[in-house]
Length: 209
Length: 209
Image (cartoon, rainbow over all chains, first blue to last red; front, side):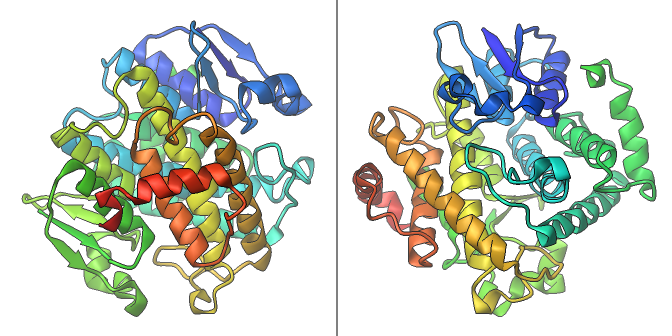
């Protein structure tokens, strides 16, 4: 088994934190996104969507997409459960993982990829080059900020994103937070509950992965 | 238990098809999106993201987001399994459900919401009004078309989207297909494998739900 990833990119970090929480070690192969190795024919044969992470099993079958890889490991090593313990919690974790990804992470990526000079002509992941859209960068920034403001209200009532327990939704939110603030797409200093939560999840050993 | 939904919108149809495949009946409450009922205070108290579907349990707890609701029912009534039978298939279904949703459905929604006159000032779901971005409508159309072309190649080798068995990925792809062609965001007549697959999944009784 091996995991194609890139140490500096946000989505592979989601898998690394997930694996650290599970206590699973997987050999890793670096695909250097800065040198556009994901667009070379060798890697496109592995994943036509030209993204990392990709998990390759010993029999050669592969799974792309961060959350799909996490689902695979939740099935092979259920404990500690990171996708919920009962039907309601499984629904709530999925719901909040999605909010954090679609309203948080993806909106930040819109803000970043549509404005950063180095991303010119590559505003969307994948084989095809898409031009940047300045208005979309602004929209992404506004949406991500509003999402974290809403999340701040939720974290006033719950210790973790999906409720009472740490879950994969916290992993997505942590990495959206760090990606968004590091790239300066968003500033979250005014959100006291997000701050308290961020300190707590960042203090877990897995956050270093 | 009840399901807030809207009979004419694509995402609620995903849940209805899923429930039909499972043989589950849930009382439904219509939230008329054409009259913007999702933006009224009563509904925002139910779901601040202002979207349907939302599932409400008998104890008052709620789950929003199409796939989160499907996950809840996969946990309460596992058979027939629509999220995969073993760890690899669970990963593959998640991967392809995501591709169909993010590259298909979301790209079509970008194409539709950013170009249709009736969606002016509401280019993104949710409480906040966002202006349309014409370039994003074009990008969405191009991305969705390229995705279905890639899917056509996959369906030349596999009967269903995630592999050998019908799954929730087929439900997302079916409804993305119908939403995209009905709104004329995409035209898929040139894709023979997509056509064969679409006829097969549309012939299932669940497709009428």
